[in-house]
Image 1 (cartoon, rainbow, N blue to C red):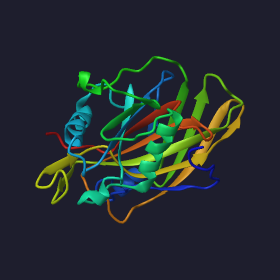
Image 2 (image 1 turned 135 degrees about the horizontal axis):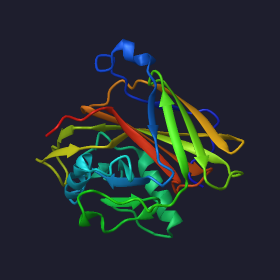
Image 3 (image 1 turned 180 degrees about the vertical axis):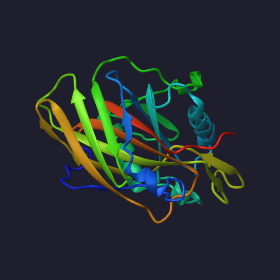
Image 4 (image 1 turned 45 degrees about the vertical axis):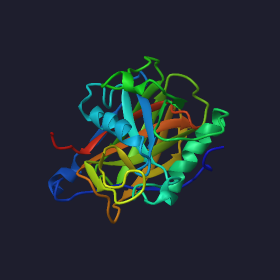
Length: 259
């Protein structure tokens, strides 16, 4: 199974006091899905992979998609298995590589590769066919709502349309965007790469169910550094110890600058 069940998990999330005034901290910040599924769109990539920049350019273009945060929520996982070929990707994490391996095991696949797109837990090969990203499959799976008053404590509520007796987990990814990296070595040596929707931290916690309502709470803390200008948060629900997302939601914490 992918990742052990955890009773207490903290996620690290960026908090800019100079961007969010103190007076605004008492306001409720909320991201909410529709009953129809919002897809989780995962990109597995690396600065050490010469085939990845075109995929990342396409992925970055999703910032302007009218479907963003409605039909899909994008997350870019930088893997670490390219790091021994001359260039260490500063955004890579062994945990992200392991997540991709867990997908490969689920699909009975012997190989993992980059760039790779995963849509709702399944390989997605025709991602390049449109600039606006995938459409929702329209299935009514339930409403996911996440709220915070201070960006330090997030409450997640999921009201499923079925499987009321199932056990659920909430997953959270802090994202950074507007990242510019000057690659000095490896397959992309001498190139300047740009990244968006980069996962900085990935965490999960078990949820509790009462009267058909599923709830979880995540404590958030500021990381020492992150980089980039845009910030976003994506959360998604799975059944306990499963990879495939049931419902997702998210949005900007710091809105990206217009090109």
